Image 1 (cartoon, rainbow, N blue to C red):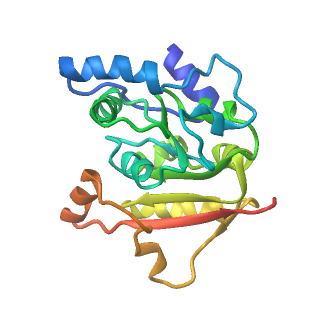
Image 2 (cartoon, helix red, strand yellow):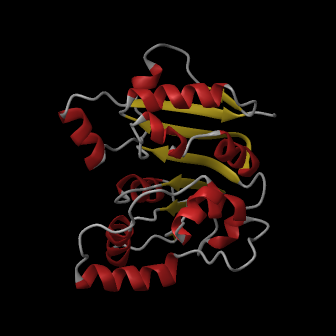
Length: 235
């Protein structure tokens, strides 16, 4: 068993590749400098209040897990300067893309982590996060791989621990089986309540939503996105 396999089994978290195409020298430089400037150091004790992680004062902290190329994360941080955002992405190419953009247009309310999101969830203090976004995660479509999906009881327990009361967990996917999976798992968890008032709600994008390249590709290929929102309640 490899170290990567042991780590994945112990954290119910990351499976898959971390590298894609070779990044350009400019991206490599931005990646190195950007991780120094924006990266979280989990070897340090977590602050009692994660709002102190940011270069300027913020009113709350949101977490985006698996931000891909960072289009949504950057847009949210730009549109909500009074909120701190932590983005987690183990895929080197996606992290390099975001940090290249930040090198050109810095944002003081953004921090990143380039490894397993479970480590961040276990590091953060309880009740400290005002929202979690999990947007188009790897669906692991083969049934024998469903156990690798990020949404599961262990990680929902982690979400419930770090989320403040009434915080929102937002999940988007174009894969019907993963949407159903998430509805079932969150519906079975005592800490989450699905926020849907009509049949159209789960096909209505979130306020301020921007369409990422991945979503545009899914729509072109005939897959209809679903947008789910769950509220953290007292378990």
